[in-house]
Every structure is written in C-alpha cells, then in structure tokens.
Length: 115
Image 1: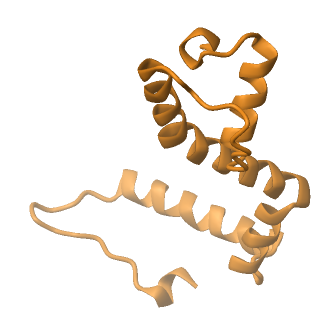
Image 2: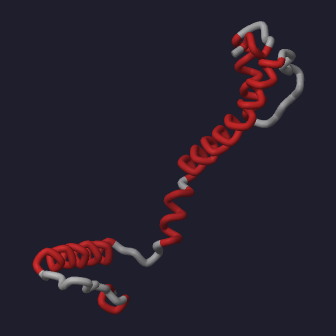
C-alpha cells in the first residue's frame, strides 16, 4: 500500500510498482519504513516472477509461438491421421467393454498394432 511504502499518492505507488515489477528500479522512490521494506521484498519475490511469466505468455500469444511450437512437435500429424487415431481409440474402448479379462491378465498394445 502507498502508506506502507511512504508514498504521497496512488500514482507514485503505481509508478513504483511498475518500475519494480519490470526490474528497472530507477531508485528515485524507495521504501523508508520497515513495513514498506517488507512489502517491497514480498513484491519482488513473488510479483516479479509472476509479472515476467505473464508478459512471456502474452508475447507468445501475440506472436503465435505456442502454435508454432505445437506444429514443430507434431509436423506429420494430419487431419486424416488424427481421425484414424480417434477411430482406433474408439475400437479399443469397444473391445475392452466386450472382452473379459482373466485374473492378473494385462492387455498391451505394441507400437506395430497402433501404427
């Protein structure tokens, strides 16, 4: 709060918070009271990483980094292949419902059955 930081107005408190969270830290406004120093310490420990992560997510959203990352991970996944995988998963579900398992028996799918 502005009183804990020893600041005269809410605008100064906002300015101080922005300068601190962006890690610029001009030093023109500093906390003078002990409680103000505790508030700023907590703001720095928790606020700076949260602010940085939020800005990174915003930039990634704006520039489409997430979409590009997914396309790099799954370059050969096409719509027909995805539909084929969904159909295969549904067939497995249907088979699991109709095929009784014996005590202690495990059903495993090899990579050759899946492809």
